[in-house]
Image (cartoon, rainbow, N blue to C red; front, top):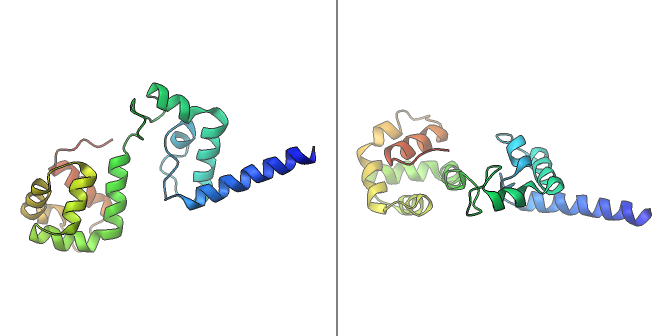
Length: 155
């Protein structure tokens, strides 16, 4: 009995360690990820990962293309999440590069979204005032406008 309790505590501790070591919103796809979608913080991430593990829904979802997973095993919307995360951390530099139509952030965005750099550069420069309508524009609004201007479907 003591071994069972020790194993359970060790597994939970390992789950907590792994969950905190991964990047934010790193729960992947599966039932747990769908149940706690949109929530942030350590506890919802641990609950999502635990639910995925208990029910095996992540493996099932990857195999069948359900539960927020696509048939190739990628997390649906992952590219857009990566784009949003990049913008959250580089908004000021992106605004500077977008206004000039050149710079490292434009290369990175092109790589994340799998779009030619020339297209990202021209769209960001030509539509700068639409992308940044005010000084205090929210990062989500910037991301949505860029995706719209680049004709990328949002999830």
